[in-house]
Amino acid sequence: MRRGGGLGRPRRRGWSGSGADDRDPQTLGRLASRLSGDRGWAPKLANGSVFGRWAELVGAEVAEHARPESLRDGVLTVQADSTAWATQLRLLQRQLVARLAAGLGDGVVTSMRIHGPAAPSWRRGPRHVSGRGPRDTYG
Image (tube, rainbow, N blue to C red; front, side):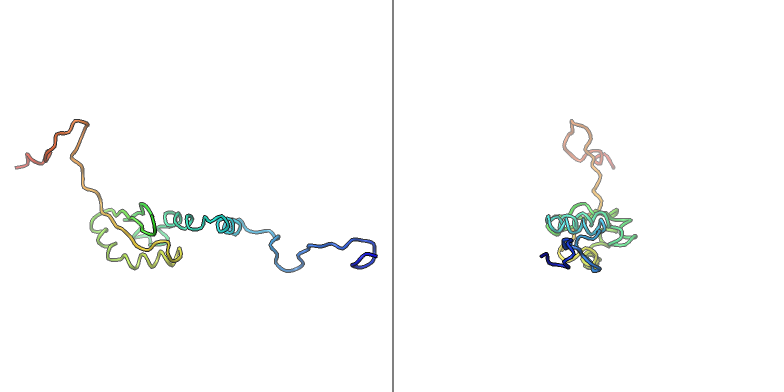
């Protein structure tokens, strides 16, 4: 005699019932999050989200005048539009790192390296004569 009712029908097994189950349909975001955690991609995705969510994380005004360049070993390199903004960002560095940690998690960004704009290059062409360049004829 069979177990489970005795009506001759085999008992169905594996139904989830009315509660939540892993086999229930999942949102794409939840599946991607689980996949990235299982494969060890979470730290790299957190690094990438610094660049994708920059304006959201640091604010619109800062994002308008500065952009992230690279992130290596927790050190975020930021390029500012002007030397004044580079100085301002250096003063706000602790607050910015705290905002980034709140939005991304601790340890993603531990410090910042802030650069101002690069000085213009007077070097032109493949045959360059060393020296001060066109500035040596000024007065």
